[in-house]
Length: 472
Image 1 (cartoon, rainbow, N blue to C red):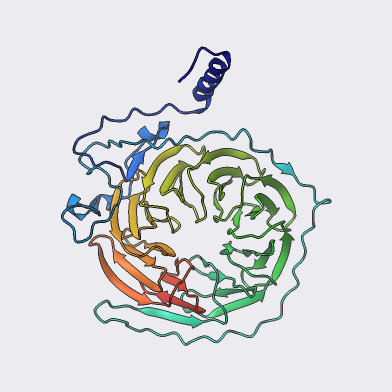
Image 2: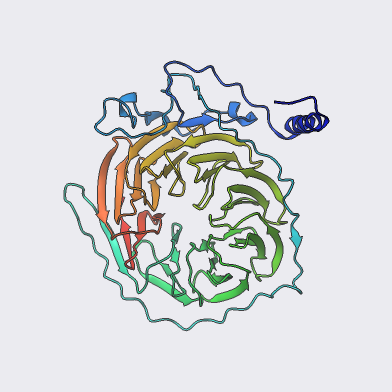
């Protein structure tokens, strides 16, 4: 509503000019169909990328059929009705009744990156080599079958003096810290301890792994670089607040973000600070990098694309809720699980929103990806599996309560197996093609460490100080 008032006319004109310059034109939505359900589980958001969908080479996706209407959660008849936002059947045109207004836009209020001179800032401190710690007592590797009908194979189980923090894994190593400040590196195939080093402060976030480095952020605000082969310290640098998000290593730069809303770029070899970028809130979500672009997500719901070499913020996007779980990168997309109940898919190079996946309540696990699909568990305990390119729903099924810790997609010919840490101490594997339980392993109550895939095994840490490696 506007009146013939000069201030209102000027304000409306400014808003129109801003929209023309900064906001992409929305794609006209199809008329609502009577056959379509009331809400959509994958909604195409306004933006030029919505019409740029192309066929993917992942042929296996075409052979994993979407759930039929009677298989959808909340369909009638059903033994238990779950209030899950559903999408139109694949044969029907997409016709969302409520458009989610997602538009990438430059952040005018974002402060410019601050050039950091080594002199006024704390210089990196060399980390003295630590004497070897007493090796933890480890149970011998063994294989057991918890239930012959489910054929569970435990490749190995390791007992540790302290409950591990979040796990970092690749094909050749498994690294983690604990609240005693001990960082360990384990062979993922056998469970053997390679090395352990004390960094002097509690560690919660997963370390960052590179070919030659393991970079660890600590709750006292320090970040330390350790030699990947031996665990010997190379350098450390003190930031102003706790580091609860995993750092990232890209090119010649190590990027860290802390609870004081500071993103800092450090020289990978020396630890000397190269730039600092203040953001609007604490960063609890793990950092991710695609080439030179480091994606930063804050607890206020802001997602930023930052140049790792210069610290310049190239784009920003504001979601509708807090972001505390780790984001994921797949192809040219950033996938952000938000506490407003939406998984946002943004383009990496410019932050334009492509689509959103509507969940039932807040997302409580990070987004897992493999072979062109994404998976997440929401507060209603519903596992949602969607195509990463279009957001099309593939599977939705109830798997856990409201405390799920994480999900892993096991890539075989395609990720047809989802392994979920339910948060109640059970690691459960679900066959996505048949929507049945393949196996379940009881690991202990209340685990909060996310499972990871390493060396072909699914590894989970328990609050009772144990590591389990499961053969998927």
